[in-house]
Amino acid sequence: MHEKETLIQNINKIHTTEMGVGRISRNLDINGDVVEYCKKKILKDESVVERKGKNYYVHIDNCVITVNASSYTIITAHK
Image (cartoon, rainbow, N blue to C red; front, side, top):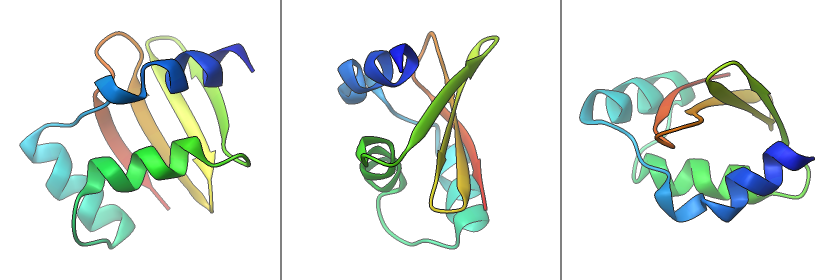
């Protein structure tokens, strides 16, 4: 649970790149603000966060959101 607490404490640092926006939008089939979409998913009570190496992996609603642990950049997300 420590990983999830750390990620939530730094929720305002979470961002992505311009390329990340396109990749996440395409992979999750969403329109609009992908960062806010991912933040809402991360904050859900039922989200499960695990850290492997340099990344956090957030498992929620049949998708996985990958966040870099040092920069809080959303790298990708997959269904």
